Image 1 (tube, helix red, strand yellow):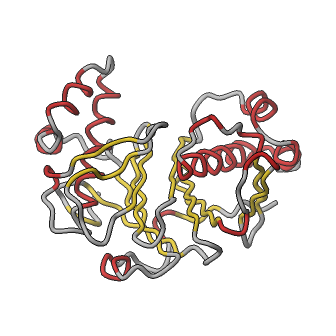
Image 2 (cartoon, one colour):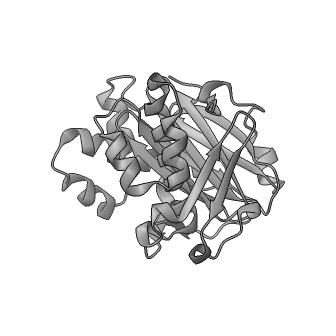
Amino acid sequence: MPLPIHPIDTTAPPLSVAETLSGKAGIVDLWYYFYESRDDPELRRAQAALMTAEESERGQRLRFERDRRQFVATRALARTVLSKYASVAPGAWRFGAGQNGKPHVVQPRVKPPIFFNLANTHGLVVCAVSIAHELIGVDVERIDRETEIGDLAEKFFSGAEVRALGVLPAPEQRRGFFAFWTLKESYLKARGTGLALPLDQFSFRLDRQAIGVAFEEGCADQAADWKFALLGAPEHIVAVAARTGGVPLSMRAARVTPLRGAGAG
C-alpha cells in the first residue's frame, strides 16, 4: 500500500486567489506557516496585535509559552489568509464557533462567503480555504510525536485500517498511522461533529492513485460526495477533506509568514 502523501511544497497547480474566488468546484487552498522557523519577537508582537481582547485573554490563560506562541500563530494565519480573499483588514475579522468548535466568520459578511478550517501542531499551523465548498476540514500532526500507534489503532481504527497498517513496512507504519488519523480528523472537522461520530464508523483506503472512504450505516453520509488529500513535510502530515459532490479535489498550497507575505520562510 504505497502512501499517497504528496510533498506540501510541490503541490500543483500553484495557488491563485483569483481562481479560487471564481468558485470553481473542487478548489481548496492550503496556507501553511512554520511558525518556529525564525525567532522574531517583533513579528510575534505584530501578529498578537491582530487579535481581539477576548482572544488575547484566552491566549494568556494558556500555561506554557509554547502553547501561547502556537495560539498567536494560528489566529494570525487565519486573519491574514482570509484578508487575501476579501477587502477586510486582518484585525477586523470576528469569528464564532459551532457546537463542536468548528470556526466560521461572524463579521463582516463578505461575498462570496469564505469557508475555512484551521489546524495546528508544534511547529506548523495550517488554514484550508474554499469558496466552492462549505464542508471542508483540515488536520495536521507531527509524525515524530511519542505515540503508541498500535494501541491507538486497535482502539480507534476500523478493522480494515488496522490490517492495512499491519502490511506496511515497519518504517512506514508511523506515517501510515498518522495518514489515517489526520484523514479521520479532517472529515470530522469538515462535518463539525467532533467525536460524536466514532472513528471506527468510517474507514479509509489508501492507494497510490486515490484515497477512498467507506461509511457504516449509522454515518448517514455518501462516500461519493467526499474527496481527500494528504500532504507531507519531513516532520508533519496534513490531511484535507472536502464535500465536493464528487468533483475531483484540486489542491493548491502556499507557504506564508503572516505579516511577511507568501513564500516567506
